[in-house]
Length: 60
Image (cartoon, rainbow, N blue to C red; front, side, top):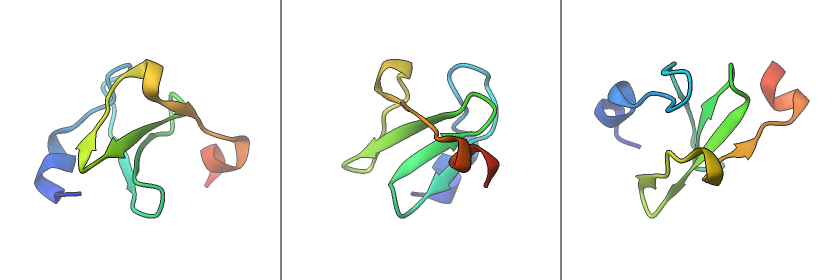
């Protein structure tokens, strides 16, 4: 994930910062407890496509 792109992306729900999970290829919003997928290098910033973080993921 390009650092410049990551710096301008925000959570579509809370407008907060996102963290990049390189291993899972996801953008993480801890406050909302969502992980947005990155498919073919393109972030999919739709709530309907996001997965809910587990309790452990929210805490780490």
